[in-house]
Image (cartoon, rainbow, N blue to C red; front, side, top):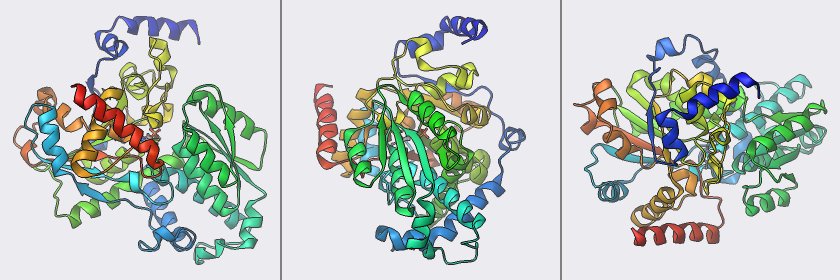
Length: 449
Ligand SMILES: *Cc1c(COP(=O)(O)O)cnc(C)c1O
């Protein structure tokens, strides 16, 4: 690190908001640089056409997906999750937050996305498909007008086995890339950080994926993977810190969400604002979804990132505008959280820059809060998620407590008709005994309170 950036981090140390983050206090940040959608996107190289391109590619792959993943047969190969009202949880949250919570609370159940059971089944799988299509088109083995079910053949698996895909991951991205890549016939190498759960490594190995364990955190796992892939022209690296392809795969979620809202007769307009709370790690997943949401709903959607108090990487990047030139360790924050999907110390520079004028804000949540809400959701709605997926749950109360935001956006008269969506980013693939342990931790915290 240069002397200059050291100095600027020194200066930030004195900042009162940074001091709150250092003290691990649950905090909320409202983006002072938010611009209207049209202004904010002037400097962004990505557009609705790019998201539409990703959507069309996923359409082409549907016959293949439906064929090789029978759990997607019912949706004809569409990898999508339910959107559920959670009224009992809303009632319990009212009690928990000791304040009335108006509007409607819903859970976007990406925890139950087919194939890999987390939000990574959007971007991760999309990037693998994108790479496979590119190779097959270039080799003249495939045309965009073909029935892609033909990819499920020895001919294609043999062709793809000459190529490898590598990725660095805290776990869930590795699962998505590993499951999809191995199914197509690629050899896959997943570089796992030390916080990755054992069952994820075991599951990947059972599918023939090579798992490289690193005794270090996520950024190092990514860097090592990148280095190794760089030296091999037949190896494609899925770069979680920089990939535009991943980002676009996530962004496709928004238009589908719009259809689901429409089916449930939920209106989004100036009088019916939509709030979306997105658990954030390196930023690609929540950033991509938020970008798609802003494209789809314009200024009527309000998007917030949610991060662990011990891993507020994106919040630091956005707040200081140092983006990927800052990490939580620069402020003596230890990046040790049970929310393994969010255990990221340094944000994606690409996502942090892209979202600087688009994201409405961000807040931090302690591990105890995530575990407590995990048990509460299980008791009230019978849904068990992994800790990361609960990070967005306090959003509805945080925002309704935030008069500054409500006044700034002239929302006083529309909060009663607002919709709040918590992005439930993962959980259904977690082994039952592990889920039970999460629940017990949360239940114990609840009874202490
Ligand atoms: C990866 C992940 C996130 C965050 O996505 P990023 O792209 O890392 O910001 C949130 N929740 C879960 C369960 C995840 O696996």
